[in-house]
Image (cartoon, rainbow, N blue to C red; front, side, top):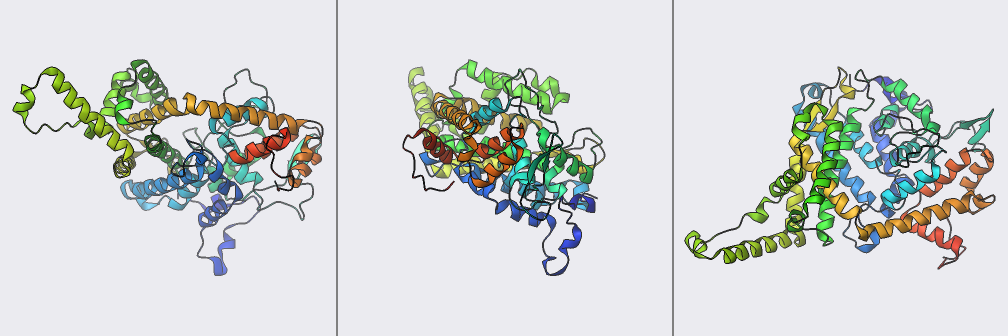
Length: 485
């Protein structure tokens, strides 16, 4: 059975019996989907950057619209697998669970994108660390204000006998829903690390959440705890990233097919190196196919994706052959340039491209049966489609997110987060925080948990609110003091 009754357990103690009566039309996953959809953390995704800052243009996606698109792809992938995989025809994957995992997958992202994540991790190094996926689990399982244990809200977070006692239950999702957002089954070390890179995993402070979901969902006989719904969410995120972010880059005028093809070999080799590293992680058994992946393979993939750009029509082959070499080159180059601009500038062509790619990649999702338990089987792309997704995704990341255009903006974000964290960490700094956050800080005193509360507050900020808060404490273009938190 794919969904045993035990996996519907909630930390509040609610069980399957709460579906009886007039609300029996709602499944556990319907409830959890609604709790995520209506949460403030989900709404705040509208103010967090996906690729380009949202204030630049109303066309560009933000984290909220990206999450909605990932949810749609995830539902489609689940529906298709239920048709083509015999085991899931008998015991179907719940598309709603895949959707809710996709809606929640970016909730933990801080302001200012990847640079904001790196900034908070450096500030929390030795204090538990910071990572977007770990923060997602923490938000839905701890921080959102839906449920708590006890009779009142006093002392939700306290230090007792030297250890933290946290009665907050977040959205009180069932165990299987929590499992669907646990992407990385590894605890982030609470000790200071000499490696400044962000570690993937979950926080030491949230080990009880992970223990709860594992106890009720079960054990993976392959050793890796990642449910089928989580892997569908993960692969759907990659599919959306590799296509829709590319569409935004075309719309913004940063890329077009010909410009991508014309990139220098060193850049393409850098893309190929990252694709090899990702291949080694997910397809170690296919080493002979990816170990020699290079710039020429990147070219081949781009040629395949943008094939129509280079399908040069020759109305009269004899006349074309009669042209001199220079004239032939000019003719082909002019056509390819016009066609490339058309695919980048024309909305009909952009949508046709993304629709074609999404359909191709959804069809390319297969099931990797790593063990006997279908709960922990993995959805993954056939290898050729994986190489295509990773090439497009890596190309967009290295040419845009790592470009000078966006790095300047994100570097400013690093300074803003560091300044806010420093101000709130001062002796009386928490007096500038909202009442609920201030109360939490007061209840834990000077313990290390205080840093986590400050980090949670900053991570919840939208890009715009972080800038506003920074201006408040620096007095530069500060909004009214009466504007609420």
